[in-house]
Length: 96
Image (cartoon, rainbow, N blue to C red; front, side):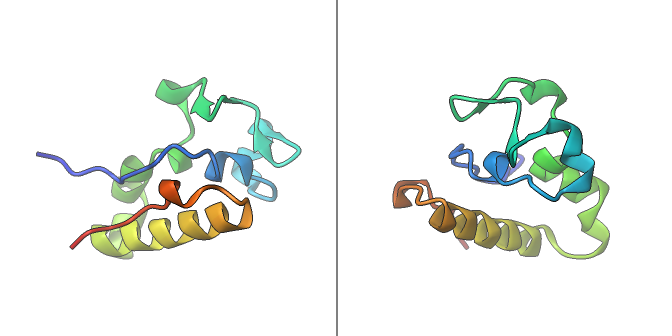
């Protein structure tokens, strides 16, 4: 059984892409143009950065463990949620 990052689909990361150069083509005032009702309208062909688990395998696995990567992503996600005033029910938790 493969474990995947526990995304809560709050849309915080998709609405905070300002200044990320390789997502510039998707950026409309800091929000991904493909974010529709907190869902991704190009989910199957979304950029690598948006595919947490595949990005780990392709890029980050040489720098950290999957647990470290998940914890780092969860912290960043929760900070974005707090900054955007997103309900706490969407917080990402990484269990041991």
